[in-house]
Image 1 (cartoon, rainbow, N blue to C red):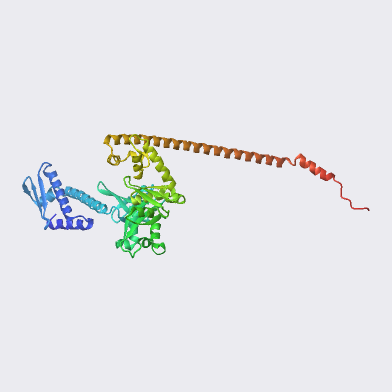
Image 2 (cartoon, rainbow, N blue to C red; image 1 turned 90 degrees about the vertical axis):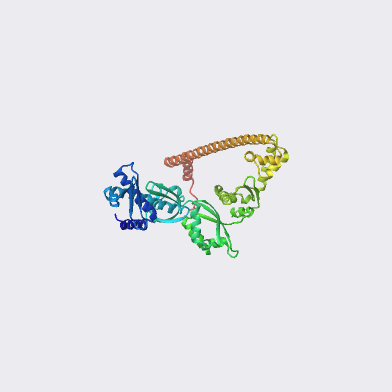
Length: 452
């Protein structure tokens, strides 16, 4: 291996494998050192340096200069080659690892190579990736040779290779699709401020516009909804709500809860909670199916949202004031102030910051500890009572279901018995009453026809 050949090898590996030349030079040097130690002994001090400009090899063993031909040839070119291949593979792995680590959260496109056990193996440009079932949109399936789009979720080193995990269930995919379909986002005219998502069911995307002439919601929807339709189709029909962002939470939270109409938003800043008041006819719409609407709105705004009607809030306030006042060391005035700050249950009071309660009530640390301890005990009792009520409700539902099944079975038996009686009657001929009626009709005189 002469100097020119060294440079050619380094340049070829650099271009083919996209590995930095310095890493290749270091790999060759390490390979030659390893091979030399096998010849001169593992304890020998071998140093190999390759000139980066002309490719010449300079080697020493315990301070004695070695001939370059001897270094490469006699001491074992095959060993050097094996070590060099290993080093190059490691360098190639590290380069791929760095490349895909930088792509975490970005969207990539690939072709499904295999689909087994619910997991898809996807071929990307220079590596095979895994799309596990847990990172797929619920209900979707894939087939071989299908082209899929997903985001890079995780990258791990695995021996001399890397393992790339893809995802179609993370909010990043929604954001990347918006960036692809809506030019105003790429141009930074429209900005995506927050995303909350339950994959396969519903997403909420909060957007804002830096240009007053551009309607951020209308631009995302597109003419006749063509832009948002492309995104929805890619996500398998997942519903997407586009929310107008506002830095004022009292405006943002009602926007996030649409299509429900909100009457008032009460911010409890000490708890990071927002109490949202709605009319009775809007309650189920604001909460959403299985709590989905309020849950996504909470994630979008970053605040815990509790939906109530005016009557429910008034009842909660009365109950909280009465309950807090019953605690040792809590005066009526302090109870009312706690309620004003949004504390409506013993559970809320049990997590209050001691310093805040000390300031609100003018108390010592020992007094606060007593109050918090009482609140924790009452909260545990309330949780136990609620659990018992849930168990009782489940038992009542079970008994009611069993009773209903028994009644249905009894009704079915009675219907079957009635059917058997009718069948038996039909087989045995007319009844006695029917026979008597027939005989009487036979014995009745013929009508008179007049004198002959």
